[in-house]
Image (cartoon, rainbow, N blue to C red; front, side, top):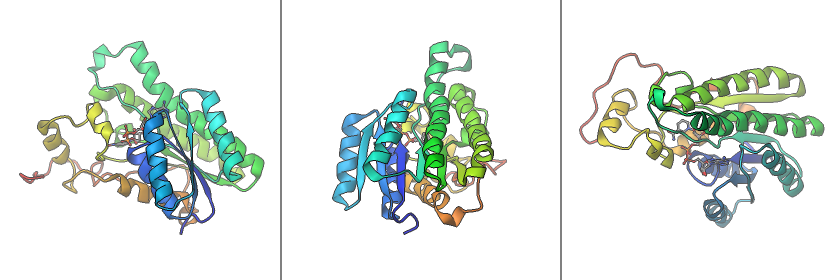
Length: 261
Ligand code: NAD
């Protein structure tokens, strides 16, 4: 029970990595506020976690709207009496040739992945500073923060910027006892892969040929890292982004892919 009696807020928690993190935080003893723009998905996920015996609360909020983030944190405080962990996880990707990206594409991706996370940090930190008990803020980055894939340029740019949100916030908030860390997953089996990362067999083979672990990651494997970083086990870690990626970032050649992988 690494997070016993802590209150955690997770954005983009209706499904995928966000839901896995919310579940793992709850399994570690936290009371969890799940937030998303997908009302039906959020209701179903909260019902599932409640059915598993966890203490959860749901808030519909769009992270591209600062007023929504403020309402989310205020509701978490009102419902569970505080906020100890904030996970800025909500994210989208638009797959497009570099030269065809429009201003609208650019603004949409950055308003959610980068601006949403920046203000998620700021709004949560304000509440944590006022409470005077410190806290942990986590940002869901990606291996694309460090790799230059021009077919998801806006996504890569947003995640590269997000690593600097993590770093700068860590320095700014250290005096308040608030740690800020990033998590940069490799290719994880969620619906996001249908946004263009993995939509056919050729893409699967290319990704696996660059993944020493020889398989995609499971959302629960990212959630385990999030639970560690959110807990006192990571008490001397701040400012870093860590990469649960099956060895992808360290690889500098391709590996053979098993025929049935
Ligand atoms: P997903 O598409 O399955 O889930 C994303 C969730 O975010 C959805 O429930 C969606 O409704 C929600 N969302 C989208 N826009 C929102 C907004 N404006 N406000 C609030 N919620 C919003 O994706 P996932 O794979 O679970 O991704 C979660 C995070 O992990 C993202 O930040 C993503 O960039 C990151 N990530 C994913 C992978 C991967 O391979 N799946 C790899 C690296 C990083």
